[in-house]
Image (tube, rainbow, N blue to C red):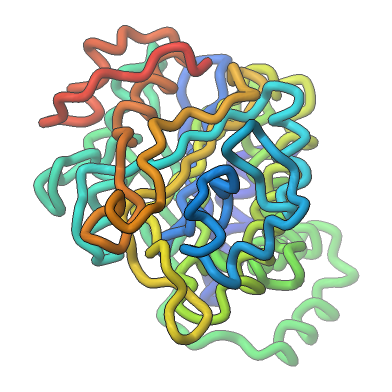
Length: 381
């Protein structure tokens, strides 16, 4: 078992001294439940993840991107899952994964920074709220001095707020060369204590926000590390994992497929690492907005509006796709180009979190999402 203070105080400090920082954020609260928020930075294509193959307009609207779903596993009469999501698909079959489609935050423009700010703060507009909904969630839990720890260059907006968050920012020094790293590894080889610290630091270096790196092995390592820090009795109870690489303006078909394989590997490693705690676990996978329905001239898609969201874990009442499907016919598109949003992401998150932690959704929704008029979706967990 990794001691949390040991890893953060030594291993992570060593990593930061060389300019490394994993994209993981951990929070501690007095509850047996585990909650993981996986943010897909860059606007993940929900139509390329959970495809409405039963929509008559799907093939014509998506062009070459529709080919990924030839023979893909059907979730129901309307939707099919990308074939690279094998573990997540198996969890859906075991009723441990639930998907929601045509989902969006209140944000309706197409700036990554603004969209991510709305997603993370829970506000109705960009920069209207200063703290994050995940930090505010800590204040709603029956916690003994609830605290959060960020292992990242900066604490993500979702975890910023009045509840104290410690972070380990990377050094301003330039990145160390591979030759230097190899020499330091050799130097520490014979020292039991320093070698262990150095190995942990090198492991954190391998963690990357890009899901495609090293054929997805780094994504799996991220999931395994998150599980290792969530599993102990005195470990984290809430984790946020940042993932990037979802901005598929060009060559989307191959790029998105590898991204999704990395996400699948991360979830598999998280589940395996948590073991008997998996029934107490809820994982939310969400992005700031979706992508255009039509393919652009470089085989990619541009910034859109609605997307898909996943709820995964042993605590989920899964095996379902929730969607008030608007359709992909030209007349049904938002602004004539995007999947039209028909479900509030705030309501989905609020309902899932309330059910998971046994909180009153009527009180939780305005606490997490000030200004919203949405009611939390019930029956998710």
